[in-house]
Length: 356
Image 1 (cartoon, one colour):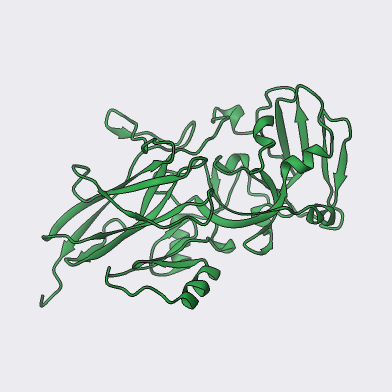
Image 2: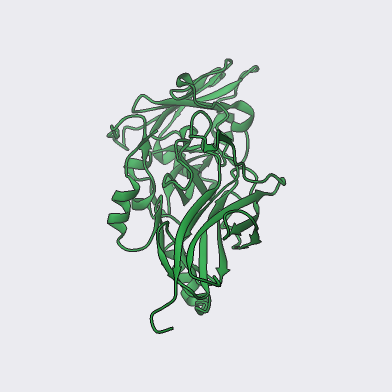
């Protein structure tokens, strides 16, 4: 999966602090930091930022910081006045919709976390945004689908295509988005319309769609033809945002923090190890913005002595599954063919403050 912005480039853009696919860490804080007032919480939320008991982080990824992936470098130039979304294939009443007609059907507004299937453990290609649009079920129903439909295929203006099972397409959770974080969908993120399929890797959340096709066969998209997963279900994942690997931290109470995500199942528990996975302690998890949103978590850590420590995080979903840790000859497996699986760890050095 080709990335439009690298971690190094984004960190340079964001300045100090850590960045995770646009989830910008504002700063690591002492566990003694005061909680913001109700007014401050509202202002921070509107900016995408929360202070979760000393862990201050952007829970909502700004549009210009949201990760970008594409199978090509081309961003289609689409005339909104001339644009028409065509719905056809195995249907009795194929039809077209203008942008205005799509907007008039709006019935969905949801926080959804998206992630690229090529995102490595602890990688940048993940983000959380507020999407607005129309449920796909409503769009398909107007075309009167024929019997025997197997998949719904999405065709994009840049030549890309992919599909999802028809049964999933009829879910109330799948929708066509034309707004992102309160603004018209940015060009790089699929303007004028893209698909949002919660809990499924980004390859299925097709951008710049201009045609929806109902088919009675197992339609394979661009990446599936190259061996990538067709189900593309996001497994239980978690990662550490603070502290960053290699950082020197003071020997005092310190807030470790990050995010966790479980695709279509939701997070039930997050644990942190500070001793190389020998023991685990429960972290505190913030209530997510929606059932499809990542969870912000924090853990108050008080190291007892100086030295190097390896911190690791793991999560559990609401179906009781624990985050997978597959390996081959002791090596964490890569992203191909169905996404990265494994635990995220960072190594830091604890030192006493001078004069302490």
